Length: 222
Image (cartoon, rainbow, N blue to C red; front, side):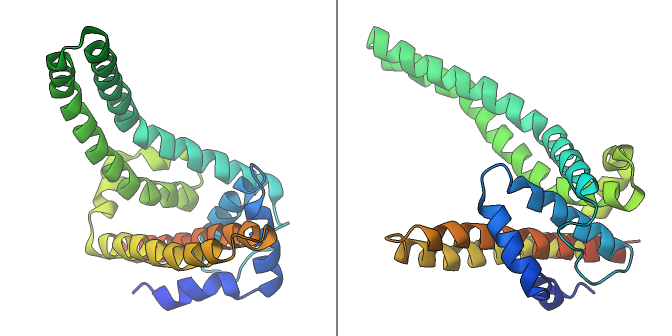
């Protein structure tokens, strides 16, 4: 059974790493490194190691995991991107055409052709967001990029009760935590340093905790 409380507590288990990770996560571009670190933490959990790795452990490995994770996410989201591009382009061209000709029917026709593409693209984007985390876990577990694209195995593991519940919980946890901390950011917006640090704090906490949930779920699924 996935221990959600343990996953949420995990980022707080090492105060030094929490502070340093939050600062790094708040820095543009450099903050991406924390994503690789969170994936490395998940790979440790897949191997049965419950403790957090050091931020400085295996820097090149963290960066490689980040790159591989991004590639996996992009590939799974590619069909949605294509439909968004085509459908959005059709709607925009229709809007410009309607403005130039003063003929609303031009926009309506464009919306009729491009709208369904946007709708299907949105559905595919949700599916990609649902499947790609388990694909990333497959990559981390096997250590090969091809494991993330063993579609039969990935889809089989994605459509299990354990993973579906974990994914929903991860989404709800992310929304609630982001909403609470965002309210604090707004309340302290007169300052500069507090919102800056809080943004990094949010990213670090969510990345480490959510990937911990996914790793636990992946280990449970046979």
